[in-house]
Length: 261
Ligand SMILES: [Zn+2]
Image (cartoon, rainbow, N blue to C red; front, side):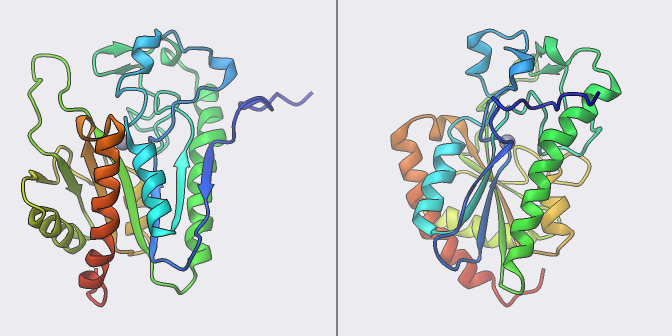
């Protein structure tokens, strides 16, 4: 008898693709857009209040990604499941791939998982999502492609190390510092924005997965944009950031293209 698959027929597909409406160099990728949970995991032992927190998803980024895709007419792929089910910006087997604790909160459903249970989540969600990103990049063929990874970060973590993070937006980079530098300059020219350079996180293949795995492997120009969550928690802020990024990304690409990574 074959084992039932990790996702049931009642569960949503692990990713959602908004196809391009016109030729565009941009591919938008949103690893932490969703907070769905497969039926078999219930509420994962967490309260409704915990599901509203940044540990479950990147607050505001789904709306920003969707609006940006609408404005640019490019393709967008969103991860549908919560990062607490499996974090799609971590390699399989990474210590924080299926976190047993996140920002001081215990995640009961992730405690003492067997290798078999981990593999089931990797197969059904992580690999399915990244295979689809691969297919979207393959479809670009010889067309110029800019890989744009969208995230949001909490203004402050809990615990004794907690401090207010001053950056309104951060640009994370590793294989392609030139793209981050050009975009940072454009954001700073807006006036009034504190722009982080590899802040609040440093991008590298050990602590992240999506940009190193796709952007660096294919040597694509890439941006990883992290917006502070209080900026985009509400509609007004989301619309400001959609307008700003939709205006700046084509200008960024005008300056960036022609330069090698
Ligand atoms: Zn994120």
